[in-house]
Length: 250
Image (tube, rainbow, N blue to C red; front, side, top):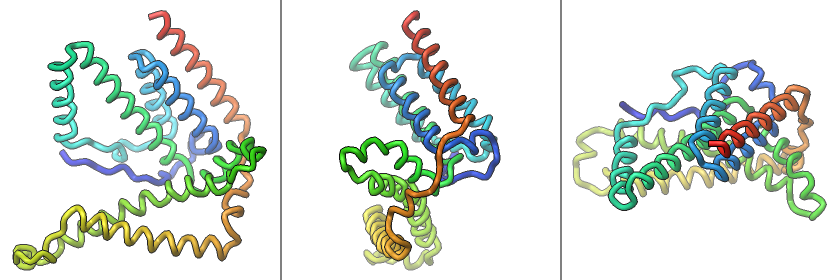
């Protein structure tokens, strides 16, 4: 079983999740992440996992987009459980499983936001959410642009490394087995090549942003929440309150 890398870009769709404001999705992810971080119990983790499943069903995420971890991923979890069991016993194993589940759930929530949100809406949403920090004369627009460009550049970097790996596999076998150092591509070579390409892309993108009037234009996109966003936030708050109450009672 091989790992299918999930596409880090918006998946096509016109569901109610796709139409939500990007800031609303970020607030929901932040709220759920803080709740599971403060109360990493099984009821709260199960609630957030159910929330992610409902989120994916409402968004119409195809089953083929869900990644399938390889065998070594589960092997590493098994090794971690074994080491934890030897050093901390059964209670340590439960803590290890909760930590693993928390990391996977937070990762799934982040990917869901990327799958249902256009990259062009991320920077304006972050700038609006951090608007109160403007009173402290903080560079809110620059921060928002940096976050948005980082999210946009990550899939490009992954695609660049995938192309480097594919081009290496297409090289003739005779050259690859010649023993010459240039015929072998190590992970360091791939990282260096990817970093060189990323620096070139960053320079080109910076020149393009400057030519279009600077970063202010990227955060000036008129985006604001609507009625559906208010309903989504209220339902999330009520569900979180119910999950916290259930966790305290149990």
